[in-house]
Image 1 (cartoon, rainbow, N blue to C red):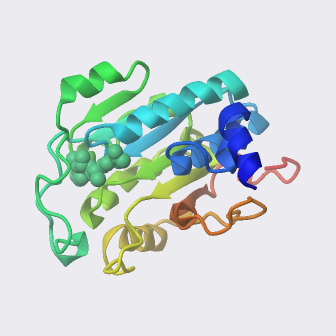
Image 2 (cartoon, rainbow, N blue to C red):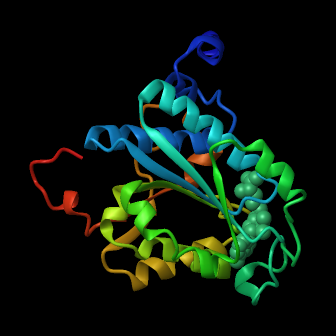
Length: 249
Ligand SMILES: C[S@@+](CC[C@H](N)C(=O)[O-])C[C@H]1O[C@@H](n2cnc3c(N)ncnc32)[C@H](O)[C@@H]1O
C-alpha cells in the first residue's frame, strides 16, 4: 500500500490521488469528485460547490484548486461559492449552539482583501446566511448544486443555511454530496449543533432528506479514515430524475 500511495501521490490522476487520501482536504476532494462524476453521468457540464463558513479562506482556496483539477481531468466546470459574514461567529443563541466550545467573534476573517486576492475563480457571498442562503436560485438552476460543505459551527447558523435546500428541484443534482465539519467531538449530540439541524431538516421536509453517505468506505483502500463519517448526501427526492425508472443514477 505504501508504495502505491507514494506513486499515486506524485504520478496519479486526481481520482487516484483522492482514493489514496493524498490530496489536501481529501474530504472536499472526495465530495467534489463524486459530484463531478455524477454530473458527467447525467450529461450536466457545469455545477456548483458551496462552502458555508469560510473564515480566513483556507478551505475555499483548496476547493478552488480542486475545481481546476476537476475541470482539467474530468471536463466538468465546478463553480466554487463561499458564504460568510466576514465577522466571525455571531452570539450563540443557547445551549444548542455549543457555547461551551464557541463564542462570538471566533474565526473572524483575518483579511478580506487578502482572501479575495488569493482566489481567481471562487466567489464569496458576504452576509448572514439567514439572509444570503435564499439568494441566487436562478444561478443554481443553470449550475446545479452538487456539493455542500457546512462549517458554521452553530445549530442556529446551520438551520439558516439549510434554506439553500428549499429551491426548485432543478437547482440540484438528484443527490448532493455534503460534508458536516462539527459532528464528532465529545459534547456533540443530536439535540444540539449540526446534528440537531440535520434531524430537524429531515423532520420538516418531506421530499428533501439528508442521510449519511452509505458508499463509504466501500472498497476504498483505507477503511477507517475519520472524515468518512462526516460525509452525507442530500437526497432531492422530488428531482425529476429520481422518478424515471430507465435512468441509471
Ligand atoms: C470554523 S469557521 C470556517 C472555517 C473554514 N470552513 C475552513 O475550513 O477554513 C466558521 C465560519 O462560519 C461563519 N459563520 C457562522 N455563523 C454564520 C452566519 N450566521 N452567517 C454567516 N457566517 C457565519 C463565521 O464567520 C466563521 O468564519
